[in-house]
Length: 430
Image (tube, rainbow, N blue to C red; front, top):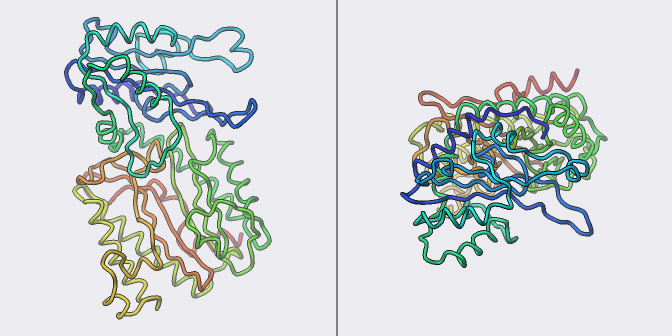
């Protein structure tokens, strides 16, 4: 890992929150992710399952966390199983967690080698009535690959058919959605790294630069600041490419007169940031570009004010739609007849702003978090309105990450990243 070690007090708090919501006489198990093969002997870079990381801080493959608050033997109320290392593994792959280091990272005293899991798990299941399975029920999930968690669940159902089953996801969704101060600090650090990357670009972007060169500049700045790199696949879209919401080819040349939409951000310690900025390739906005940009910025600013405790996510998006409708009327992109005759299921503004405004962010870019119940303090949301005009070969989106406060407007984790037209033009002309 490149990031500085996180205090295990965060993971101790997180486990306590989860265990407080478990049923009596129940066990919860959380598995690391697999290392996924490409072909031959090649694999994708390892990415830890965010749930086991959230609860233990362990950032290593082939690890299992077991929580059993009612275990008869107190030392078995929290157990971490890790892969046993040896000299051969250390030479070829580098050092793995020792038992002492696993305790240091997680705050868990009872550490076993992974080879002991089946025996110990069977013994503890004789004391338990319920097993919590960690299924992925995120509202945007579309997973088709069988995961390590999936295999564990199938095996467990065969071996322990008489046990009751419960779901970890509702608990994880609730507790992961409200961030601890340590988590917000890590996300702020990720945003600060993102700021460095964006400022680096303002002196680099000019007509003739290629989108992939911009991607390379960002990656350089992110990695040199202890990030693994991008929090998600970067979108660097010049001109008409910005009309494609998930444009990721990043292989065209930036041209004079184009706007450049960049949805790019750094991760830090597995925590995401999520930034979008749109700048003129030549460093100077045209009057039309200014008008559309300022409209998007006004929507973002007004939407941000609505992210307060008690707000309902679905209703919030409806209100943002009303603000966007007003701005599109002002830009001449809609007229009153368009609004009067609109389909309520697909309002007129959706022609130019077809995606949502906000989502939870944290250990995942589209993070866990309750959406059907009122928002709470210390939830962290993106705010990302956009206007996309195919006939004008232009798409403008602006995005910040904000923390809901107990009182007052949200705290903007990206407040120091340039967004006003005058500042962007000044920095690009240096």
